[in-house]
Image (cartoon, rainbow, N blue to C red):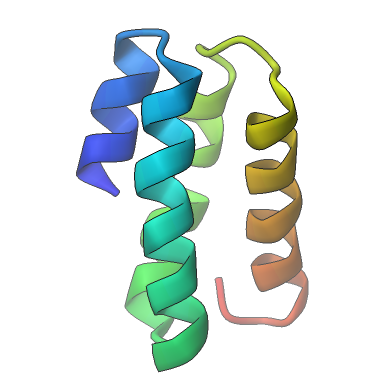
Length: 71
């Protein structure tokens, strides 16, 4: 997730999507509340990158985790 934040600081949606998607997949498999919270903390950083289809998908997946009570 830290690498996804770096990607956001660099305004690089591809980098954000790559690293955040990997973190989301791990979090969903492990059902880790800590990882879910860290992913939730990525949300404000997503505002720094262009709103690509991948970024929209990330927002949706992070919101889904939050709704399920994992975040």
